[in-house]
Image 1 (tube, helix red, strand yellow):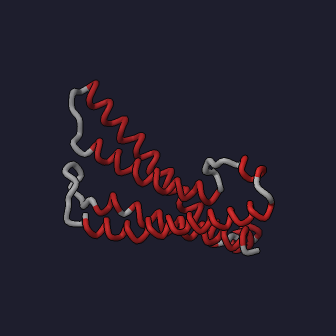
Image 2: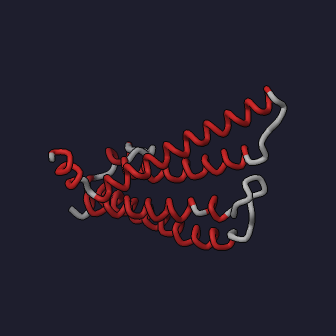
Image 3: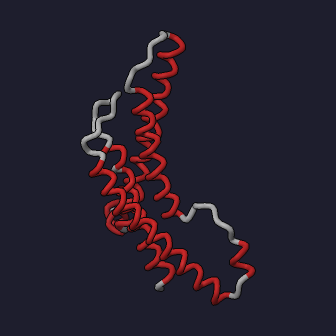
Length: 161
């Protein structure tokens, strides 16, 4: 009963964050597993699977892109905070709003241009895994959409309130 109430109180933002966090962990573990197979195969058995490096790159790309969205949600990206102390308070508030707008613009471009790139590369096949390169490039628009949602949630919570 207490657990159900706690689950109901969780926001959509928190649920999305947890889902993306699990997906990132899956890709990170997948990357470690595949690289281990490739290294052991190469140095112990003199055989390397043709799909190994390609799948590791696939996992690394998805992990890197999605974890950038998670870092934005947690406000964990590195930034120069010294400017906040130098400028007057009103200027700092204005700059923070401007930063959000620039980040929202970047996420929008990542989403729209990523969709175009994904569609363009749909007929191209990855040689080792024999799947469309579109699945690799799909990490761009997916991350752009998630990043946009996290930014809009934070913008509403921190800037508009």
